[in-house]
Every structure is written in structure tokens, then in C-alpha cells.
Amino acid sequence: MTLRWMVLVVAALLLASVAWRYRSQISAWLAPEPLPRAIVFDNDASAPPPLPASAAAGPLVRPPGVMRKCVRGSQTSYTDRPCPPGFRERDLAADRVTVLPAAPVAAASQPGQRKTLKQALDVADEDRLRERMIERAVEGATR
Image (cartoon, rainbow, N blue to C red):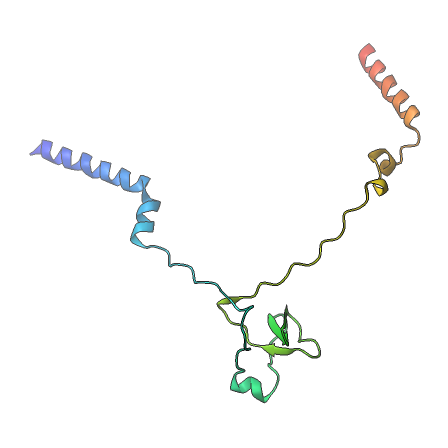
């Protein structure tokens, strides 16, 4: 009877150590993460979404710092301030993303206009600095 209990205890310890070793995989298997929501792009929307009844009565009132979607014709911009003149504020869809064209990249500087490190540091007394470095090296070697 004692041998049977020892085997059961060893088996339980082995099972516990395996469970501890693979605890992250086991927890992911027991409680899987929900699938991410699909991204729906609204750039190609042919008609603007209808305004809610409260927005038809007047401008939307949002606290400062909240993202706003401002639309004028086919132009869409996002801001945290009131919409510029000529734009109308639209509701943001929580599950939609609008892709905007990238800002133009500034032209690279001309190679002839770039300064060298020597010019940037403006080391005019180069010979005097070199002599001082040599003197320090010689003094350090003679000590």
C-alpha cells in the first residue's frame, strides 16, 4: 500500500511540474483571446453617413481634446479642435479607419552645402592642439 501512494505522489508532482512549465500555453488554450475586430476603411464611401437627429439641429458639442472628423466635399481631416470654416463635423465610427495620403517629404540637402565635422567644430588652432596632445603623451610616457 505504501508503494502505491509513493507512485501516486511522484506522478502528481510530475504532472504539477509539467503544468507549471507549460502554464502559459495551458491558460491560452483554456481562455483564448477574442479575435480582433475587422478594419473597415471608409475612404471610398460614396455617400456621407447620415447625421444623427441631435446633430441635424445644431453643431456637435464635444469637450476639448476629443478627436473630431471634419468633412468638406471629398476632403476629410481629423483634429482635436473645432472644424475649420467650410467643414462639417461628422460622427466618428469606432470601427473604421481612414487612410490619408502621406505628407510630402522635404528634399534632401545638397552635398555641397553640408559642413564637414572640422567646419562644424570650427577648429582653427589645429596645429596647436596637435602639439599639446603630443606633449601630454610624451610627459605621460616619461613618468
